[in-house]
Length: 201
Image (tube, rainbow, N blue to C red; front, side):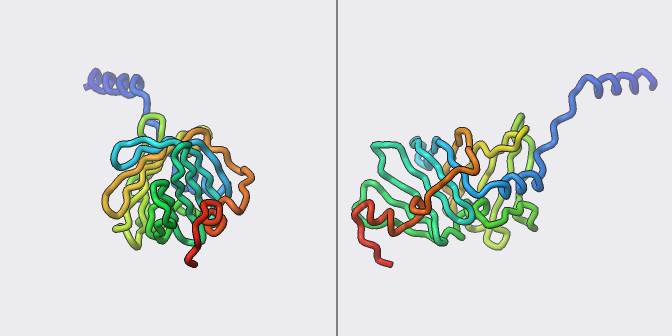
């Protein structure tokens, strides 16, 4: 009995403890520590194709995805809507309510991942922490899978699953926070004018 106990004790010493995931409070603190951020990104689209470009975030509620040339597509979230400019179309953007997209969860004025039923998964995956979040009032809108590195906490990528089940993965470069971002970057009318389109608003 003593030998068995000693063997178990030795095994416990020899096996390193798994690192705990970054806490939800710390991740919420991280998001709330900045208003603006910018990063290069690589995007894996639902059809498996790959796009690259530059991401700009201005919380609350604003984000801009500029795609590298020759792709002139653009995703612009502002004033409560997500506007998708398709480079293959001369029409105006397709528009959706930002509140119906999982990305809205991290663009809120104050991010609080500890809200009841918002986080449906939270675990350590090797050197990273994974959090899967959804709108607790509307889980049918889809979810966002966020991946963070530690020391210091930093967002590395996300996977958005939309309301049709399609997944889009965005892999970030070094996310620079506290950057200067001009207001026109998130102005829909200015973007329409730049593209020679007529606003219907």
